[in-house]
Each structure stands twice: as structure tokens, then as C-alpha cells.
Amino acid sequence: MSPMDKMWASFVAIGLMAGASFLISYARNRTKGFLRIILSVIAFLMFVPILLYMVVSIL
Image (tube, rainbow, N blue to C red):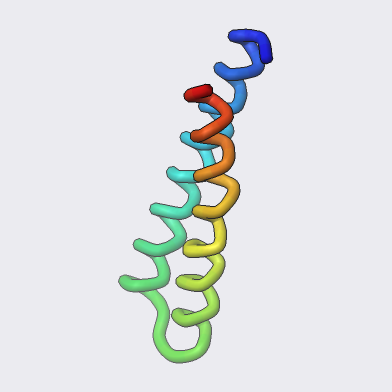
């Protein structure tokens, strides 16, 4: 994998991390009930591709 591809993979991971962080903060501060659970699960599931992109950018 070229260094530029690794750079883009790390940018995607950073962007997904920022999105997940915003989503979990919004869910905890602004929502209640079932919507809070759904947003938290979505934010948690975003960590699977984050982990994959992180590993790709390191190797």
C-alpha cells in the first residue's frame, strides 16, 4: 500500500472518530430514551471501521 493510501486511511479514521465522538456527546447531552440508545449504538458501531482503518494506516 502506498504512503498516500495510508494517509487517506488515517484521515478517514480521524473523521470517523470525530463523528463518533460528536454523536455520543450529542446522544448523552440532548436526547433521552430510545433515541439515546440508538445513537449510542451507532457511535459504538462506528468504531469497527475506525479500528480497521487505523490498522491499515499503521501497517
